[in-house]
Every structure is written in structure tokens, then in C-alpha cells.
Length: 272
Image (tube, rainbow, N blue to C red; front, side):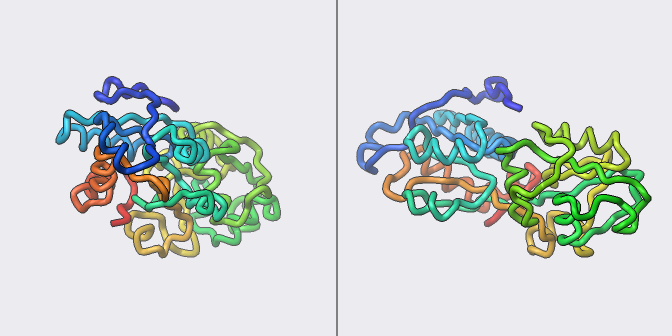
């Protein structure tokens, strides 16, 4: 859901930020950094922007939550400084002159209703459930009930991450495709036979997070890579253009040890 960031002291507008040469970029630096892309990174970019702007009040950081694909396109077309993506760049995107920097890692958690007796699934079982090979909870040690498969809408970064990791891209047999993480959690919490997925930071006690291959999702297990369903949160920039002075300073801040606590507080694991 798009939010009005003016109340947070951030003007939410689209600005042309990427320049074609480092010299002209520095000379025309307006003190504004334009970010565009992943809605899943909204909390992260908001926390980083707010913290940085407090220490650097002359810098305005803007964010347009359009989705990972749109953010990548915005960088490529020169409509922003930094693209935000909740997936890695594809080979063809890298070949077109884009580069990625992983800022953090986000665990994607399979969630079920709190009444569900199943607490652990293998990655293969999750894949089989989402592709319709396993259709009843009794097949994985649960009750004799049809599994109601819930997911996100096409174009969602969370969906892209989940399907890429589980090997279910273009194969999922969804009963419902919902447009927000909140809707997924609410739907699963109200249906004892449902299964869904959501970012680790969004999971509350209204649903039960499943372990995968015996490993529970947590900051520790995401960071040490023992939890298998995880994805990168990425800054995307051009390879043939330098960032403006303001954009480069914010970029460096996001990768610094100083920002690690801010990233952790946003519910994801710092890559640094």
C-alpha cells in the first residue's frame, strides 16, 4: 500500500536523478535522492531515509513504491537515482548496463493457521503444495482437509522471491491471489486450512510460521543461510553513470556499519 511520506518529512515525488556523467551529476546535484521500486522494501527504505535525513537535513530522499520491475526500469531509463528490488537482477538486466548491491536479506515465511498441527515442511513439500501435487493436509501429517493455497498477485516481489526459491514460477495453483502481505496474513488467520507466505518481518502471532527442513525462520537463520526461503533486498544503479554526490552519500550510508542497526530494526538482516 502506498503511504504518504510527507508526514515523515519525506516528499514522495518522482524526480529525475540519474545522470550520464559524474562531472555533470556533481555540478547539478540538488540535494535530492530519488528511489523507486520494491514495495516490500518500503519499511527498510523509510527507516534508512528517516535516519539519514535527521543527520543530513539538507538532503531530501524520495521514494516511489512501484514494484521491483518498475524500479529497475526507472533506473535504466534515468528516472531515478537508485532502484529498489526485492530480487536479484536477471542476466539480461545486468547486460543492459545495470548493477546490483545487496543491502539486506529478507526471509520469506510459509504461514498457516494457528490451529494447524503441521509445524515443519520440507522445501519439496512446500513446492508440491503450491503446484497442486499435494492437496490435503493429511499428506504432510496434518488433518484430513483440503489445502487452501494463498499467494500474492502477479508482479509482487514477495511472490517472485517465493516462487523463484521454491521452483514454482508459473506453476502455482493459487486459490486466492491477494494484493498485500496484510491480506495474506489476515486470510490465513481466518482459515484453518490455508497456507500462505509473507516476509519474516511481517509475521505476527495471528498465524504460525512453518519451519523448513527443520529450520525455523529467524534473523539468525536467514543471516547464516540455514533457512532456505530468503531473498536479497537490492539497490540497483547504472554501471556507466556515477551517482550524484547526495545519492552516493546515501548509498554509502546504507552500506555502512552505522546503518546496520536501522536495517535490523526494519525487520531484515543487514548484508554488511
